[in-house]
Image (cartoon, rainbow, N blue to C red):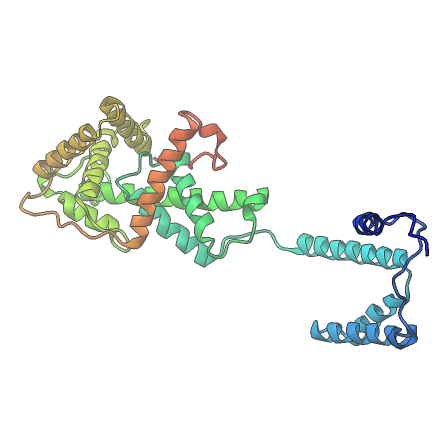
Amino acid sequence: MSAPSTPITTRRANIFASMTQVTPCGAPSFTSSPGPENRTSPLAMSRNADESVRRFAASQHLRAEQTAECVSILRDPGAVVMAKIFVLLFSILNMVAAVVVAQPSFEPSEALLKNIKKYAMAILLSPRQARYKGNEPVRVLLNLLKTHRFDLPPGIEHNAADYDTLKRAVRGIFTQLRADIKKEVSLPHRWATRTVTRRVKAAARCDTIYKLTQTIVAGTDCVVTVELCARVALMRYIWLETYESDTSKFWDEVDALLAEIRSKAKGDQQQVTRAFRVTLKKDRETYGKDDYTITEGTADPVQQEVDVAIDEAVMNAAGAGAGDDNTMDEDGNDDDEQ
């Protein structure tokens, strides 16, 4: 018996090497085909698919006619199935568009207005507030509304018309609250009847700053503090300085004085504190009887949250650059309250 022409070791190497090669197209297949016992008839497969679809449709609470439609799709060619899916998608889009068009225009609810008023008052009575008019307080309040949402419609920020309605409501509440605060500041100095000379009461007959501040915070979540008393003393100073003028606007004058104090302090918070301390001291010496101690109240959670929001707004504005008010989306003129 003659020896094989190719050594055994070489043949084995060829066999092992071929195991890692890709089988070329057209090469014979050596995988076994399933025998008759492993095959599933098309009828059985169709019944299984029908039952599976029906069970899933039932779990999704589809109606009978909807379930039947889903089962019938199993018999359709792939292209027909895709076309039906697109038809249904467009039908859904049309229904959604009809719902959106049918929705009434946004109007703030009583609950929302109550929450806006609560936060607006806390902003106006915060010693951290740099301005009482303009975009700054409005921006702080809108940021708080975006955080809490309350009953705001989802995505209202992206609906220009509805968001304008919300901003008008916010500005209107700020206007009303500023008018209320100004009225409380002026009432202790007014006589019961208006006179031609616009006389005011003698200083000794006016409320102390402590009592005046208590009157302003009554019915709110705010508390009396030394800092707030100093702010109110500054407001009283401005009112007495401008009440006889037909041209001066009270809140514009308050904001202007606050800006001047910050400008002269040049970032030195101690100088700002001294300015308010002197204002409060002068007020206590001038109005009422200075025989009281200002009891510091503990700020409630709403006031604490507002103070943090004001500080964050100041930092964000500083990061955006000075004089960047035109980039805000809260722009709008305040009502022309005096």
